[in-house]
Amino acid sequence: MGTTEPISENAQEKEDLNLTKIRPKVLFFDVNETLLDLTQVRAQVAQALEGRDDLLALWFTTMLQYSLVMTTSGQYDHFANIGAAALQMVAANNNIDITQAKARETVVNALRGLPAHPEVKAALAQLKSDGYKLVSFTNSSNEAVKKQFESAGLTDYFDERLSVEDIGKFKPSKATYDWAAHKMGVKPSEAMLVAAHGWDVAGASWAGWRAAFVSRPGQQLFPLAAKTEINEPDLQKIAAILVKY
Image 1 (cartoon, helix red, strand yellow):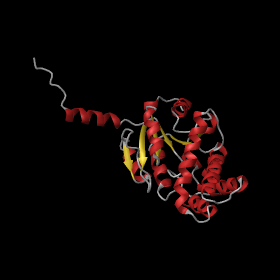
Image 2 (cartoon, rainbow, N blue to C red):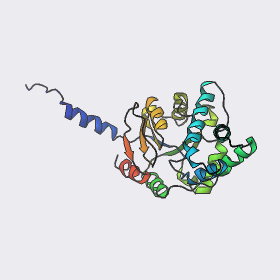
Image 3 (cartoon, helix red, strand yellow):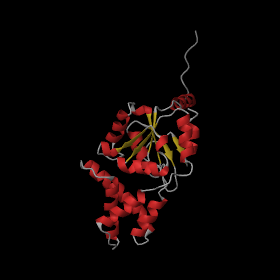
C-alpha cells in the first residue's frame, strides 16, 4: 500500500485558490464611488468651500468619522445630513461661513443626478446575465439611493437595494454586514462585497465576507486588513473574473 504524501505548500495554495473560485451567492455593491462617479459632488462641495478643493478629502473623512461616532454612540441620522454637518465643521475651521440649510442643500444637490462610471452598466449586465444575484448596499438612505438609481439608470440591474437606514448603523460596523447577509438569507462566507473603499472591504472581510476591491483613483486598501480576493481598477475587470467562477 502506498503512503499518503503530505500536501506541499504550493499544492495547498492551489487548493485554497480553487476554493475561492466558488461563486458567492450574493454580490453586494457599494454605491457612491463604486458605481457612481462623484466628480459632481467634489465640484459642488468645493464651490461651497470657496473653491478650496484641497479640503475635499478632509470633508469626506470627517463625514465618515462622524458616521462612525454616531454608530458607536447608538445614534443615527441620514448620511447626507452627516455630510452637511461635516461640511460646516471643515468650513468653520477654515473661516468659511456655511449655514446648516446651505450645507444640507449643497450635499443633497451634489449627490443627486450622479452618473454611473462608464463601465458599470456593461459589467452589471454581464454579471446579471451570468446568473449572479446583485444587491446594492449603501450608507445612503433608502430614498436617496432610489433617486440615484433612477437618475443613473441602474434600477433594473439589481435584485434588491439595502440601506443602513433600516438597521441604523453605518458600515463598516460588523452588525451592519451581519444584518445584510441575514436579510438576504446567506451566510457571511456566501456574500461578497464589491466596493471602492478600503474601509468598506476591510469591514466586510472582518465580518467574514469575501471582498472585491475596485481600485479607483485615490482609493487604497487598508494595509492592516486581509488582502481582498479580487483587486482590479474597474468593475468590468472584476466582472470578467467573477463570470469565470
